[in-house]
Amino acid sequence: MIEPISKTHRPLALLAAAAVAALLSGTAGRADEVRQVLPGGQAPAQPAQLKREKAPDESEIQRFCSNIADAARDRRYALQAEELKQLQAGIDQRMKALEEKRAEYEQWLKRREVFLARAEDSVVKIYAGMKPDAAAERLAMVNAELAAAILMKLDSRKAGVILNEMDQKAAATLTGIMASAARRVDPS
Image (cartoon, rainbow, N blue to C red):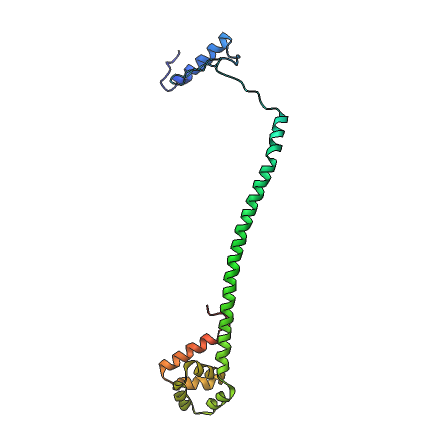
């Protein structure tokens, strides 16, 4: 028993029927005839309108490639030169940032050296010989950076006793200055 063709299989059946008809009529092998088999498509082109173009032979292809080889090479060089310029600009920016960091570090190092040089050994010896409560009172009146430099050059036990005798706020300020000056690394 043959079943009826469903609506979803109808285009396939039409295509198969057209192929069978073409085989039976002997037109399937002819290349100059074009037929439209699916409904709703474009109208078939007339055989006179279709033209076959001659495929380029190998010598034409080689001539074309040799003609554009110089232009392609020039374009490739131009692209590489542009890329090198962009890379150079990036390197220049990084070197500028590195130079700024180096200058900042040198400035910080000079400030640290000046800070430590302020407290000369003779002044340090004077404060080392004083009683802790008197030294604390005198250091509270001196510039904070100078007081911190003197305390840094004192024996740590003696500096601790002097800081203990000072006002809390002044001791905290001096401790902060001493801690930042004692760093061996760039503070920024």
